[in-house]
Amino acid sequence: MYIDFIISITAFTIIYFILLYSTRFILKDLSKKRYKQIRENLKIPLLLTMLNIALLIPFYYLSDSSKFLSLFNHFLKIILIFLISWFIIRLMRLIRLYLDDTHRIDSHNNLKARKIHTQYRILERVIKVLIIFIAIAAALMTFDSIKRVGISLFASAGVASIIIGFSAQKIIASIIAGIQLAIAQPIRVQDVVIVNGEWGWIEEINLTYVVVKVWDRRRLVVPTTYFIDNIFQNWTRKSSFILGTVFLYTDYTISVDAIREELDRLLEDNELWDGKVKVVQVTNASEKTMELRILVSADDSPTAWELRVFLREKLIKFIQDNYPESLPKTRVEFPENQ
Image (cartoon, rainbow, N blue to C red; front, side, top):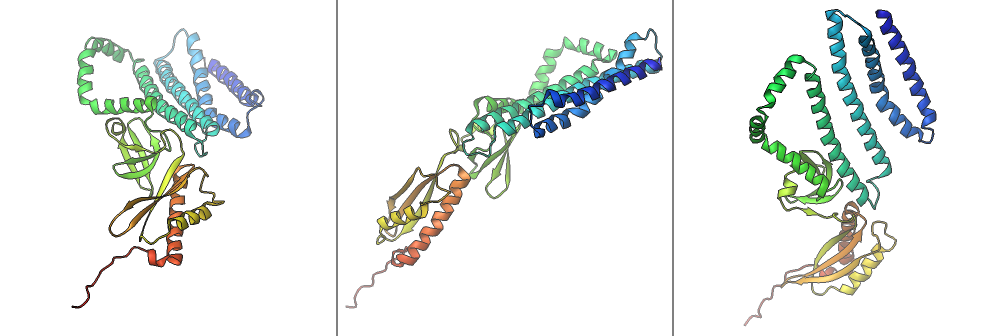
């Protein structure tokens, strides 16, 4: 009897190593990096799954077995269920790594990549939850006593579902909202948003919550239902291209044409500017100051932020050095002595 186990384990071990070393020739068109990812992610799950199957096969040829062997056979079946689930989850991780290489979100024109990553990350989390749930349910159903209880409870499933629905309605609503985000995509990974007055990037989109990375490196953890039920700003909904504004407040004596010439000089050969939009406009005039709006464009929001900071600093210095009399001032007129 034990010889059957030894033969089965030996045979499957040989098959495993043959598969392991032959895949390098089968997948010869893949790069070393991608082949290493496949090997590192699937090597251990595949080995344990094949070892489990090797131990299970002799039981089909045993006409009679002891209580210990029966328990061991049952244990192996449960382990096989979880090993297959683990193997599928690792395959999904490989797909995510493949998408990271083929659709990079750190490029300038990354709208399509962000769309794909958002859809897959939410889909991956939904499938993982389903796989774990099905694996646990399948493992429990291998016990005859639990199977009988499950069949008897099936008739009252309607009542149970109503009770569970009321007690877990917030969780269910969050999960449904997460699926809605994957389909409708009001937000995507790396989108620039303003949430509750905070400006930041979408860092993670999970099944029940979204992580927003604020400009000062804080993280906002926001429920997925927020992006379905509330109004928020998305600066990169259609593309990563974005406009940046700089406001200057000066005296009426400033030369607007001189500001336009200085802006042209600052943007010439400037890597931060994408060469599409540059505008200087007088957008407001009060009793004390004149408001100048400088409008420029950049490839993405981080670059636009850097460009705005750069222009604000340089234009203020230009006014200080060349038009100090045009800095904001308050005028007071004293009447002549009678």
